[in-house]
Image (cartoon, rainbow over all chains, first blue to last red; front, side, top):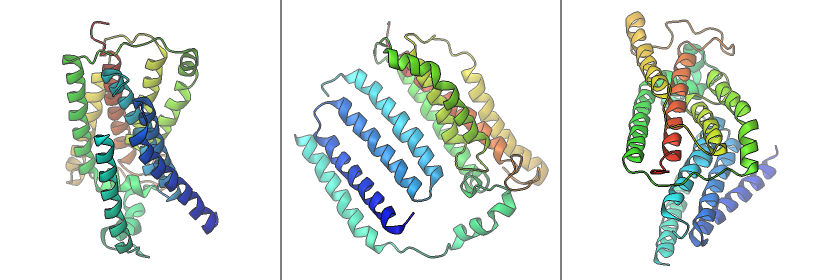
Length: 83
Length: 229
């Protein structure tokens, strides 16, 4: 992969992560916020993969994107939709 | 609104800290100190092609043992809390898509998790991520069924056995090589073959079984924490 393409991908991904992180603060319902948080985790995992850290990427994808999201969803079931 | 603004302020402060720190970071061309030592001698000493696993399981095996203990305490606390104070979430009927996915996907995902654990010394992966991947298959099965049996089955036995075997493998090192969690006393084999890396594959299997059973227990506790329902 060429250097410029790599830079472009990293910049796009990083921009999307920052935008998603800000969006979490402003979305109305909790479900959207949880899904966006999961998206940030998944993007972080792709970012780790691009930085040649596949071990960290796998852990981030399985724990950050799946496990944490699921725990948040169950927590949302407890406090209801209007948090 | 106050909360949103507070969150925004915290994010801006963190961003300012990062912007101040990142230009100061110096990227070294070559590894130094401990990192250099691991990278240059790791493969010969441990027989593991994956240096990350070699550091996690062999060189820093004691830290990993501590991590496993921390995870054990955390999962015990979560299950205890959920048993004492049910969160009262009613398990709803799965939709057709979820029900079908939960029939088809668990086997390949579980195979993937087993591969992570079994090849932790050869390719990216390891006990912790492999264990969570295996636990997520049980999560998928639970999501695809409307009711989950309340009994624990062999889960606690697997968890205890895995934790015990991690400790015993460490003490085996004391007996034979005079060092807790010594990696090399079984022979390290040829780096790259499936039977290599000394104790690393065995400890990875122990970690994977422990993590998988712990997270499955936590998932089951969450799923069944519906009060009287």
